Image 1 (cartoon, helix red, strand yellow):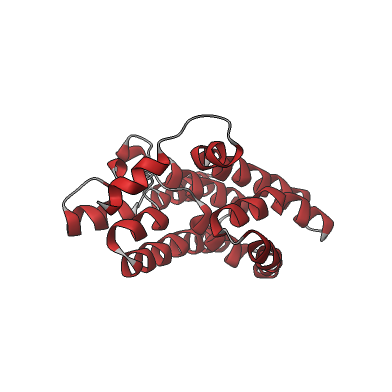
Image 2 (image 1 turned 135 degrees about the vertical axis):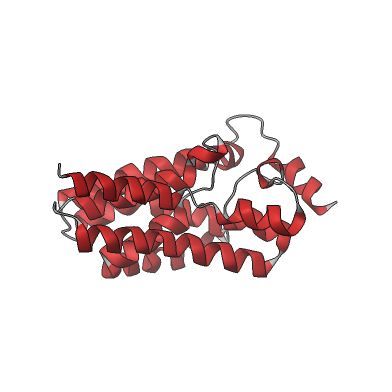
Length: 203
């Protein structure tokens, strides 16, 4: 692997570590988002703390992180697989930011931004699947996780490369792991304090 490719992947991870939610809430509320709500640093938790404007700011920046990482990888990478790896790297940085003791966000928006640059048509197919699932379940978080879980299979069925399916499977593992507490709660596999956490936010 060329030096520039290694540098690009490192930059993708560092870019992912720019946890806007943490810094925004710290600046506005002078508090640590890691100890509020579901303790995530993503847009959803920010929404419960700062409202829609905070959600919009964080979601936009998270989306842009993925887009910038993949664009840079595609523009300056010397290997065909670097843009794929950059999505994994930037998503990993968002979920496990090194400067915050590896406690970050959930990764969906950042990975979505990367996919919008890497393969916008495939991303549209994911959105196309999300809509009917959302209509049936009426739960955006769970509907999104279902699409994430099936994304590698969808890519395979639509004739995308093996590299794409492997990347999507890796991202799915990262995102589902980041949502493990929500999944445990939904599947009844263990006790979780998420319910109480949201009540505390509302107080």
